[in-house]
Amino acid sequence: MNISKLIDGKAAAARVLQQVKHDVLALQTQGITPALAVILVGEDPASQVYVRNKILRAEECGIRSIEHRLDADCPQDRLLALIATLNADPAVSGILLQLPLPAHIEETRALQAIDPRKDVDGFHSENVGGLSQGRDVLAPCTPTGCMYLLEQTLGDLTGKHAVVIGRSNIVGKPMAALLLKAHCSVTVVHSRSTDARALCQLADIVVAAVGRPRMIDASWLKPGAVVIDVGINRIQDGDRSRLVGDVDFDSALPQASAITPVPGGVGPMTIAFLMHNTVTAARQQAQAQVQPHNSPSEAACLSAY
Ligand code: GUN
Image 1: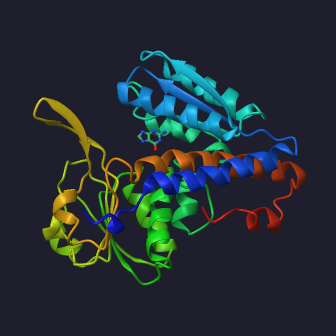
Image 2 (image 1 turned 90 degrees about the vertical axis):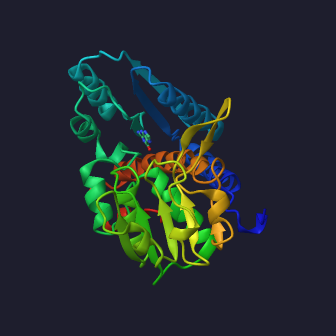
Image 3 (image 1 turned 135 degrees about the vertical axis):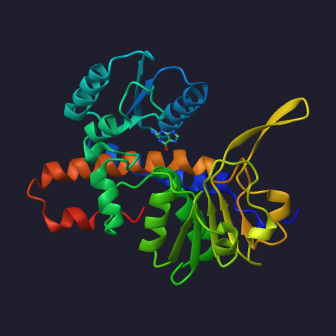
């Protein structure tokens, strides 16, 4: 395998987390301890693993974590009341509501209940709208992690043609907004696109976020394309199961100039940028207390990621 083509998400996430730890220490000297509240409704096995990892990582960074587990049949009003309590608690910097939610809970209603200043997932419409306007807001963690990997690999992305495969609210749409903000030409292809493959063949950058195992092979790629694989799909391989991406890695590798593996590519970046967003939220909340009049310096202090 040509290791030089691999984009090492584990190493990149470790660098981001190192910076987060440093930022936490700096905030602590000002008497501020960032805190992340994580809400899990129900017992989805994958969500339980994600939540455990988020809490462990927070603690490693010096971020206080507060876990709230609610039963799968918890009434929506109880969840909304919990979110209201966390919104009002000045000791809570960030609130993460793990998705998916049980069917009886309206996802949009619950996400909109989170104070946008504590919305470390960047899912509130105020942050979604701000991102689409190109403002420095709390942006979704997975696409932000993808941008970090792309900029580490390519440097300035200005003028590149990026094709995003998938149009989810969590990855595809915010990914397109971030690429546009970085001055790429952006095409979003999805299940209703006419000839998604032909559009993808024009791309300098391919971001695959469809949730279909190994859908993208070499025939989708221009030689030298940079490939970011967001997919995490569990497949049965003989008598054991394993994780594969949305990209057929073995087929794509010779065609790509750089590619993320699965696992060890985008995956670790999501949690790293959740920690980054939590520290950013804590810093902004502290600054808002010092400068209650929305002074311009508040916006100027927002960091690029
Ligand atoms: N479920 C799958 N991905 C995510 C994510 O990025 N944030 C939250 N809150 N839930 C998820």
